[in-house]
Length: 110
Image (cartoon, rainbow, N blue to C red; front, side, top):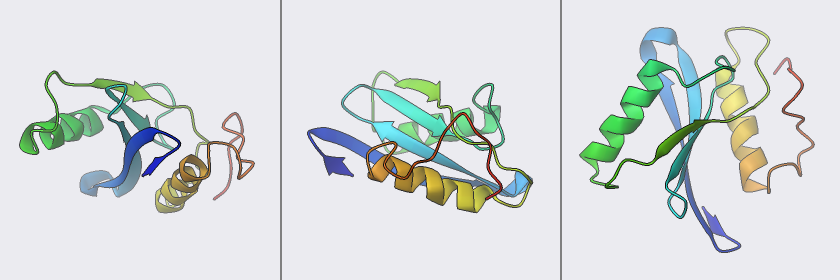
């Protein structure tokens, strides 16, 4: 996704053992990977961090490794809605963070 002078790549990742989806936004301009995880409000899951580092190393995307930042996003109400949460968070990012009216301080039943 590139718009308004920004260069970002958004990618959903699936944690198979947890049956959970997480959204990543790679901000190439500022050397940051933003993590949107609707089940982990306090920090980046170790498995997600390991996946990011493996992806960056495998694709030789970056040296040094970018900062990994946990982003505040609505939490899902039950364990089965992570795919929908990824879609909502991706749309919120692509429409300019806020144009969908998603309040990241509220938790939603998705």
